Image (cartoon, rainbow, N blue to C red; front, side, top):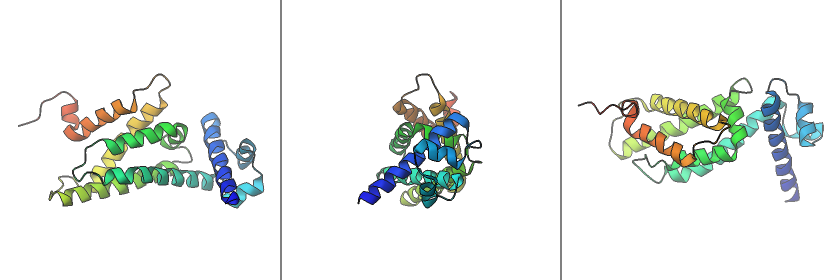
Length: 198
């Protein structure tokens, strides 16, 4: 038990050091020595957890996705028709809690690999939700769920990056979720101020 706590503390220290240093200097300039020094962890300890800084960033991203998945799963199961805005709001709250980690991922640090991991996992989950909802409601999607999921994820990642990067007072998560929910329900034509066609 004590070893588990120690392991968790070490991993958290490495995660925090990685994120803080990327925010300060950018990913490319970092060395393992920089990370271990900031985390106050021996190099041997680092290498007992990770092969290199890329492996650390991959593990940190994987853990973030697991945490997010655990939050979103109960919400995704709540409504067969969807469009409650609850999963999106949970995502935004998670991003607020881990703001700097989301920022370095969404910026494409680490040669974009963590961003691709984040995007692909989000697309996989969202496409599955779209397919399930269509089946449950006996609907035939007008756009392939894979394409629809990629459009949804790309749009939301871009908006979320803009929102998280804002240094001035940001729109509350609830307000942003409401705007994006309206966009999801009614589309860009409606969002641009036009009345529905036909």
